[in-house]
Length: 317
Ligand SMILES: Nc1ncnc2c1ncn2[C@@H]1O[C@H](COP(=O)(O)OP(=O)(O)OP(=O)(O)O)[C@@H](O)[C@H]1O
Image (cartoon, rainbow, N blue to C red; front, side):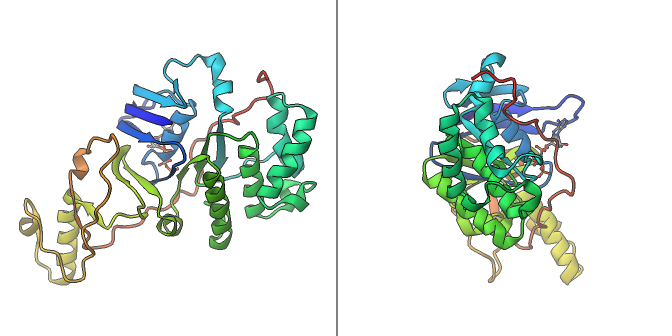
């Protein structure tokens, strides 16, 4: 369904790649979380799938299309099989809930009759049946995100890409959105979701792909937000910090080049699924038990660079 073969993306003027030599496969019907610190490449990954960016190297196949050779004139048609949801909802402020969802169908030339049936159906599905005449500013954040999700799925996409869809929502509202995304997934849509929300990832126990500096360092079935282990190189520094904190003794010699003893309280070494078509990156050739909590990545205050709306009024039917 989605395949990356040794894909690298270096933005012009950048000194290092946003994504480096990424290979993976996502199968039909999967629900995949993309996790990693700000700037690790999650949004770039999603934009490559949308063909909003071109890889600098490597091949990307989505829904049977080779995106490197897909003609520009075919891109709008290709994107009709993809739904996209963003952290900041991106609703049209001067259109009602109904019209926000209907707009997507109008620009791809769906008939009035189709729209009159499809929009109420999808609004019911997302729990907004009674709010079709409201404007975005009359809705809560969670409701606005439901409208955005309705708009993304009204054309029944094969793949739903969600870039931090709960980033602006409180935990209870986020849980409702995740229930909705799970239902959409259970109905057959493949879902890829970039997130910083550890609670959601830990609760849902889905496939987790973790990026560090554009490299896949973990691809785990039923994973958590943070692995129970950290890369071995980091372990030396972590141990050193911990020992300095507790006893003042430097620790580098004690841990480098050998597997350290696990403390009584250490979690078991995780048995994660081997990476799917993913070469092990140099920074994570193997993992050892975590000794100190790694600092949790935090969302940036400003939104990452974002692509324009997927469907333009000029698109042909
Ligand atoms: N359009 C762009 N032009 C130049 N550099 C970019 C562009 N988009 C992203 N980058 C850079 O690529 C790297 C990866 O960015 P990306 O937005 O993919 O990360 P992210 O993991 O989605 O971050 P966040 O969690 O903050 O959204 C960063 O170093 C970023 O500065």
